[in-house]
Image (tube, rainbow, N blue to C red; front, side, top):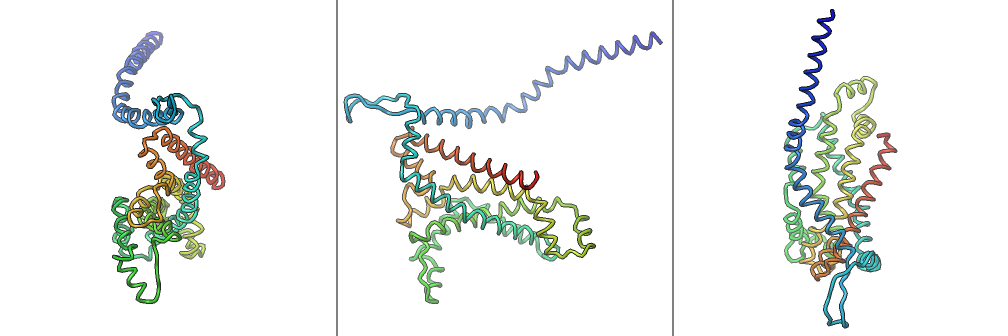
Length: 314
């Protein structure tokens, strides 16, 4: 028994030694696989973000009056004070808030309805309708805005001519409608993407759950709204967070529509304001606007996710 225990101890010691010896190569292998991700992430994400934050604390001064020599110095929160004092910035934030309050719920509701229809056993040609609903997402945002601007233009649009033929006078690019014209482009573009996320969540629900509900006398309507929707609540929350982030980053749609509408200024959205300020060589102010947009995006998206997750019991 003593010899057996001794041999077991030796084997265990040797095995433990080999395990400790293999930690080095294993760590090197992990580092080799992670480096292709972390290196670009640091160089092209963390470094630019850090540089933008640093730039937002700088100000340009001049010696000897307006036409003196300029120099850059640390200004603390001076740029941020100017951002919040800027009436154009406040107007753009209010405009984008109105956009998000209306457009995001409408888009996600349409996406949910499409996902439920595609998951319904009564629907035929599911592959065709799934591809048709997702197809707009394959169109780049700029191209989609150009396509819709053709349909909005009073001189070119067959839709406008058709509505005029029945006695209507549509003005899709007017001051009261141009924001919703941009919202329509975003809804057309992103509904299929959100629908696919919700539909994927629906596909993961066990079919036995539906069968049990039907045995209890539940209709398809009851199954959809009282079983399916609560189960895919995490996916709905996820798409809402994505939509909040995308709303605050809105740029392509109004920027394209601005080429055919005088009711969209160069500071129509916060992102357009940052670009306009940077185009005027005021990079420090543009960096401050960008940081404020990022902070607002983080607060709204993270706050919404925490609030809804607690209510949903996630």
